[in-house]
Length: 182
Image 1 (cartoon, rainbow, N blue to C red):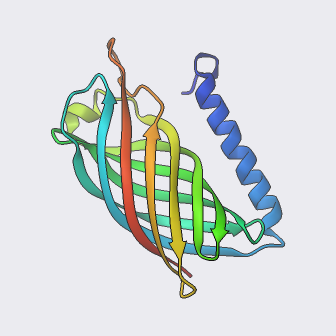
Image 2 (image 1 turned 90 degrees about the vertical axis):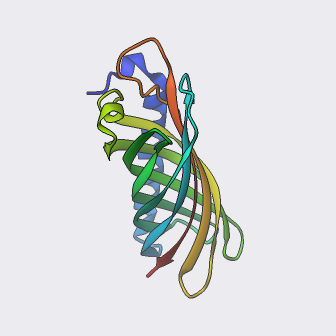
Image 3 (image 1 turned 60 degrees about the horizontal axis):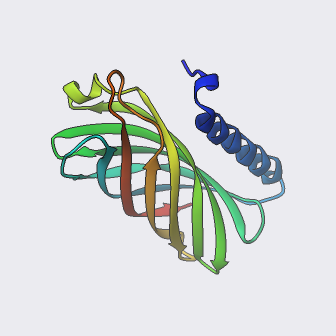
């Protein structure tokens, strides 16, 4: 399934994600844990050897916010995201693990690794790409005391998603959305 000897970047991402999760869950017993939902707009395109106009779509999913300290949280998410390009649409099930640092009350800077699995899309494209992608997300968010959240994120896929062939193609998207923490 995954050949770690051939891909050191993926190994580093997965090990970093496991370390962040382990640290977050170890401290979660004495900290606050909140669940939430989020949805929003996605603007995406392929990078590398693929020439096409971008496309727009949406994302929808859930999250768990683990307060490690007052200013540092870990937020694993599970998102369904419509991405790809104008003539090559792909749907992904994304699993980002965001580290959130609060620079002031309500305002956080976010970064973290993510895994993504193809969950649908145009059949010709879906059959020509690998079933898994990985990458990194960076962004910012603002949360109101009521639980309402706003965020913006840039996701950059770091894997070559082409199944066979000499070309290199990656993923990139910008997400803008809102959510609610319970």
